[in-house]
Image: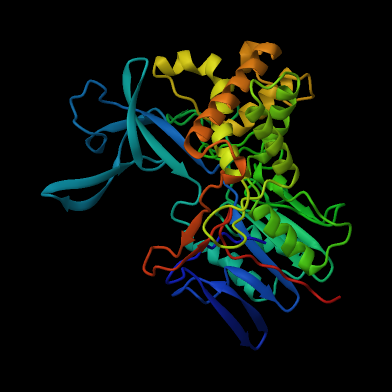
Length: 457
């Protein structure tokens, strides 16, 4: 379990051990709020949390009753709700630089901006399901700390009291379980949650999901449940700010022995933490390149090195702590990958970007992966409606990718020479936040404390 607690000085949590009548627990708690454990274990079970990013926020468009601008700000205006003109509530925060600071809010939440629809101004407000309910989350931590989650069913019940969206990992002497917590709204039918919702009263939330409707699991045929902030369970929409696609870093946890000892679990964790999370995208890139001849011996050598590096789990290691990566793999991939991404996306995105049009909703790795696998005729779930690389022509795409590789090779060799053994990039370092002490150390993909626990039968 990886509870996403980075290296801070002073640390943002503290390790505590609670022992008394009816309670025996230890783990991490927030300083000053340490009556219950945030993550930890009792004598018979353990749990951990990572952010889930499920969708508990909506933006509502409030129709203004004074749209002609006779009133200066939403704070002094009214909005339409249930066929009435309702005044915005106003929170007076005092003054800043001699100017009054006020925060208007509607029945949905605080005003976060303004816009127009059909030429008429509207106020945009943000509704969050947990607003004003933050303290109620302690009920879940109280139950976990006091030993109430002795079975998966009781664990679900405890975790369901946590209104924030978190992935809960759980283990006891008999098995493992998972629960996705959060006060998850039931939306009115026919809405696109990615867009603002009309706030006039017809499209209000219809309640919240019940416990059994949340993503949850009691065990798994493989004997393990994997979570690394992966995308939401099937049928559940992640929040608008999270980007997911065909490539997910949880795929780094892919090499498990048939039966894992405690040390094996740590080994898998260490390998995935030092593997380049983009490495799986190289497989379709390599397959496209393999159908044609390299434009130069050095370009061919670089691609062969890339193939071997990915087959070796794409390590980004500085094993001897000399400040440089142990192989040319990281530097080559950093140089080549950006050029390849540009070559794949250029036919479609260049004209759009010239017109100032941006994009959101998918990362480069997933776009390249799905587009090239589609071009290769492989099975792709949810193929794009637009073909990117080479405009959908495999030979054109292959030529573009080899040109991108050659361009990256020319740039690197011009700086470092033709001996690829000398192509070593600087290893990533990380220090304690917020920089109060100077010590730093070698970083990983997700520098955080890890929780590795074993129960005797």
